Image (cartoon, rainbow, N blue to C red; front, side, top):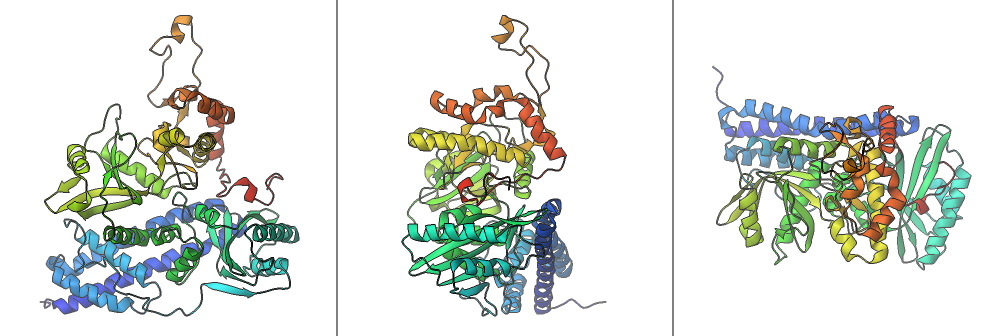
Length: 581
């Protein structure tokens, strides 16, 4: 009979089992990521999409496998917290020499959260609630960026930078691209009062890849000025073209937006990369930067830590979010903290006919889908536990009235079984009423652009009401209400049959047969909810959205495998906006 293993031996074996799982996951993650450069060079956009989907699923698959192995190993001691405290201590020692220790801690947490499924909140005894390392436990062996000293000219510097990325296909007209970049850079330096020279530059060594583009990211030094620089590249049949030049924090921040899909970038030490990016986008949370790079699990870890840190310095409380109450979700926020927490209600208000699992499936669809800068990334949290003192009494009453099955309120704490946390934006219905006239008109135009961008990525919002869209701090219109979204390719867009008589036109009932899933774009104007002047603006720019032929054309393109270009920057940032590139 095999003797029972000691607790210390189990702790050692358990820690090594989890670490082996993490190393296998990282090997898979990195292999998928490294394919991006070849996909870009060969214009394999379908392969790029497949890679993005595969990478999103890779960590969960490995975590589930390791959970099974750990349960088999620990047996009836699987939820013994003393053993898990030892496992954590051993594991912390094993990862202390690693350059991706922070990701390893998060992987460990993912395992423990699935082991202790009945526990509420987090337990610092068995989880890395905060990192075990006050400073990076390892020193940087190789810088994440490459330094370029002052060249004879700005154009010579830009040429050296671009060619150092060693793409295996030629540039279509590099001299022309460099000429445009140089002119724009000189103009920008003059506008910000900098010198007309670049004294040195620091560029991330690896390119950032996403969808049909590659981005070269860095910072330039000119006197006392530090200038972010992003060179956006597109790959065409006859070569690479520089598509755009971004030279300020706002443009870089939009590129790394929480409403966009994740980048693929080959990097050994994510910690250094995130700190570099923070230097050119200081208003970005550490969490958002990790998420943007595909480390969404660790981004969640950083977000949770950020929330706890905010609690230590605020006197505010969570309160019901501003805007119309949702039929499916109850949402709340904190006035001085720009996140929204959403909880699925126990029962849905009429006329909603969906169910809890369907709502969860919609949020998963958004997580896995190309968000195109228009769908807010919602981070899913389970078994969140907060001190009760951070909740207003009005909010607690609301939660207990509409989401009692998902929320447990005790004398000291509030525990949420499932929540989605998003970046807070201003609901569009509120924005158009409170913004100045020009800003309101601009947002209405972008509202139509958002619907079209979503359509081009195979997403139909379902509910087009303004309250389901929001405006970011950069003025971009985003969609955040996912319970009625569907794939464009699954929709049935129809033109309304002509009325048979005058009576039909004014009847409350339709005069034709229709299925529940039929969509009649001609009816969209009545759902806009815009005052007359703004409604006229929308119709002027987006009347094609009211025609079934527009949507059928999009369906045809999607069914033919067409992957459209969606630019994460304005048209004026492009070098060749009008010549077909």
